[in-house]
Length: 527
Image (cartoon, rainbow, N blue to C red; front, side, top):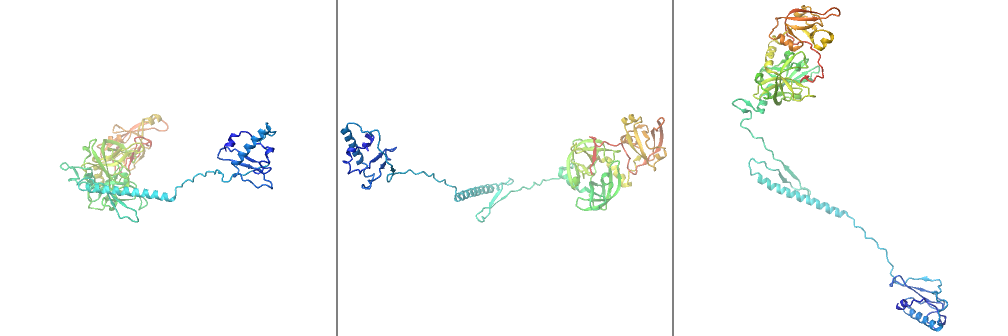
């Protein structure tokens, strides 16, 4: 190997030394040695062999060949003294075949390692571990809860924590049940009264006092088993007289009453007063619990009150609130020509509450629910007829079926305001639409569209002025009416007529001015 490295001359063939070297190298055969890119990898080129010389293996002549080649080169240079003519050439190259040496290392392509996949077995192990951890947490929590719960049970009156008990496991699964303890309401020494000496009741006491004395009223139309509307009522006597609103029973073909004990009875109308929107009905029972009637004169703003009835159709309902106004005069949509003096409250009034009892905190009835402001624009503004006004009317209805002390003129009318009067050049007042032929006014010569401007000198524009003019008068009293009349042609005339007041057996006052349905101060009766 050292000889190859030190010999920088190209390999040469010397003709003069061919015979001398014949024993080692057959004729026409030259060894070929090349240098590889690295010292560890070498290749030898072997010339084609003749028929007389055997094949010489490269591995056997690797060390001997370089020595002979070096010797021949030196002999040629010494003999001739000059380079042979083919010195610039390496050697004549016949067709050669490159044979890699035996045992030569051939680099192999490195195969990347296979990625290890997450097998199903590993997944099962992870799931099992999670389940075991969860079970351990449940068992520890149960043990802690049982320990804390046993300690809390020794304290009387304290709220004990939830007790968790472990049940026997089934198929390896644990079942846990949770029992949340409850505490009963303490029993008070006196549940009914806030002040037993004065009789002031609690809210519970008020409900227990008034509910047995209130009823639900069902009004039926043509279908005998389907109520068309419902309302409420107040039991006045043990023998079945019940006070309610006139609009609850008006135009009903049949009535029934549901009592506090759940029983239901047929009812009949005793009397109805549409002016006050009050009515009395009766059922055939003699074991009822009548309500205790108080007085509305003692009410003050801010006083706590309750309302019993069948709000929303639910019987035996009680709501609570406060008195927010007194002596409110309202005109209901039920009969616009009548003004009702009412108590204003903020208790919840709903359809079905009409005729229900408004009671103070002593359990006494102080009003009869009748109307509420429009729910679309207002909230918690409700009205109840003052009981001081309702009782005399109820007594009259029970005695005669109508209000005998109420007198009437005997006409139906439409109110004419100042704007209308100025536009059509007439007087403001009561425009006569119909005349009752059974009344004395029919003999006074009144005609339709005559306008009544005064009653006994009182200027009248509507119901409020009529009530003022007739206050204190009874049927049979005489009054003077001032009439304005305008014909198609000619000048208008004004004259007076004297008439006798008739009893208001119908309890109706007739027509009134058409109301604007968009009026912000409209009131709705609560059926």
